[in-house]
Amino acid sequence: MPAAARDTEEGEPIPLSALQHAVYCLRQAALIHLERLWAENRFTAEGDVLHAVADKGGSRKARGVRRVMALPLASTRLNIAGVADMVEFHAGEAGEIPFPVEYKRGKPKLHRADEVQLCAQALCLEEMTGASVPQGALFYAETKRRVAVPFDNALRDLTRQTIDALAEVFASRRTPPPTHQRARCRACSLIELCRPDAVVKPVKAWRDRMVNALLSETAEFS
Image (cartoon, rainbow, N blue to C red; front, side, top):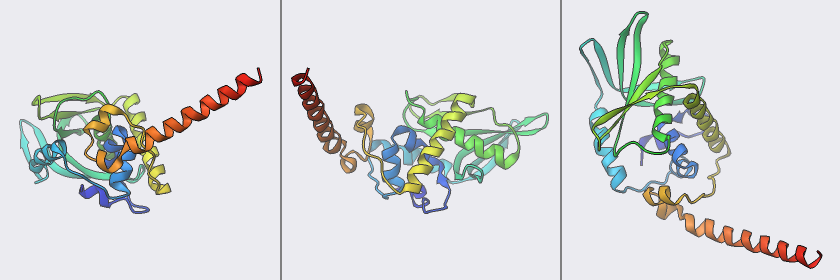
């Protein structure tokens, strides 16, 4: 189980990694960070290997760029905290400009879960350093390339909305019901623990029966 999943007691900061889970599936985030459920699959194992190097920490400087690995981050204003895989500090006219870099397995995705996690790191860095953080990057192991991520207003708003939604779930201590997003469910390591089909399909069948019954009743009186 991710170490961050232990940090969701009342009053504790929301883990940065939980934001990625929440964008992917709010129920997944609650299962991991509220119910302490976790299951490994090939994707999570590959991610663990990829992060092993970054988690060692350390700092070095090359070509005028200072790189800090496994840097602890926090925002008291947003009540979030976690560890950045790497933060580069680039020289600027007013001082160093933070540039967060997050390592991910696979390749760029259609959803914005990775971008939200990275943006949350930027929000922490802005609060911690007082410097503006306009962009960062996601490094994907499959493509071996960085993808630049500008922290525009739309991404910042989505990140804050995700923080608010997750804070509400943690405050209620209730796990949301499954939504059964077929492609995401198939790739989720928690599918056997979540069992979306066992919940969603019976509810949909019951709803369909109720709708048909109401339509039949309405037809009788028309």
